[in-house]
Image (cartoon, rainbow, N blue to C red; front, side):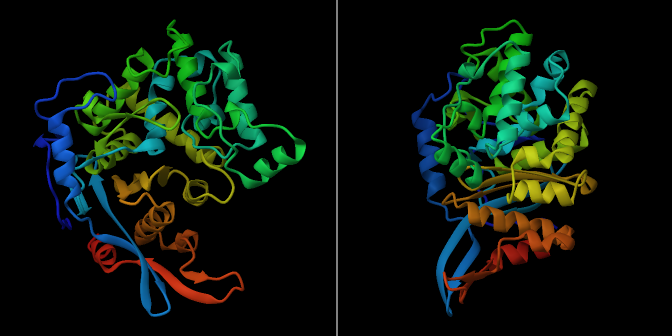
Amino acid sequence: MAATQGRKRPFSFLPGIWFLHGVASGDCGADSALHRERSRKSSCMRNPVLIELTRGSLLESAHAGAIAVVRVDGKAVLTLGDTAQPVFPRSAIKPLQAVPLVQSGAADRWGFGAPEIALAAASHSGTARHASLAASMLARAGLGPAALACGVHDPLDHATARALIRSGAAPTALHHNCSGKHAGMLATAVHMGEDAATYWRPEHPVQQRIARVLGELGRCSLSGDVCGIDGCSVPNWAMPLEALAGAFARFVSGDGLERERAAACRRIAEACWAHPDLVAGPGRLDTAVMTRLPARVLTKGGAEGVYCGALRELGLGFALKIDDGAKRAADAVVAALLARFHPEITDLAPPAALTNWRGIEVGRLQAAPALQQALGSL
């Protein structure tokens, strides 16, 4: 029985397909009065609280959000909150963005094995291994780090960041968590004989292929009005959580996909399961989950409280968004969802006890009643 709360549908649906009315495809970042009005109306709806934090006997913080769990056929088995409103999935869709790299033949041409494909689907931590592998991917396609358009940030791995500071070295684009994804996009552009300098732009064939993959896997039509620019400068397409959840269910199962697409998806998923340390890094939830549950659960987190994934054996995909963008809440929701089916990994959840700097327990982090009830219905 599907659990449903407070759902709005600014889109109209045909079986498995949604359309944004009155909006023609256009350049990424395009805007319209229609879309602004629908966004304004949707923002008036309150999503339920999913995660609570207490201090003493009182509620100190609360994280609202929405979550969808969907079967391969698009049927929702759980919806909580507004799962029809498009959200930017950010890095949570990197495994899907890697599909053209594999399906186009670029991965085979440049000799990319499972490690390289896993890094193309990664939000890696910027360790020496991550950075050197990204550099190797570029070199095989005849490119150098200067070709990366992702920008530069400190490594997410604290030990690596501290080591750079001690050495007096500055981080490079190779340390960016998206450098593997960008290396894969560049390798695809070179393989296809396309301009590598503009691979990141929305109108470039590399990005257009990715948009088609997202639309086909999510069974949705993407227009310019639902496209934004990600932190790494490539386009990011907003999609309803139900569409994202269905896309991940199809990604890991291959059901309903043509043979070459299904094979590419399977190869990417298997690469992530074989090298979960490359998908994220030490101490991070994606790496921990896929290390413990290889070939069973695929997870991929994104910025601003988004998480997507799939439970392969059950034929289920899931997607969630925390309204305030809190990573701690997104991690807690994912851990609670996965523990519903795999109680052996409850220890991977964020600590329930909140302690101060002296180690004294001062509060608790827990699933809110709405989430507990919804998960109990699964």
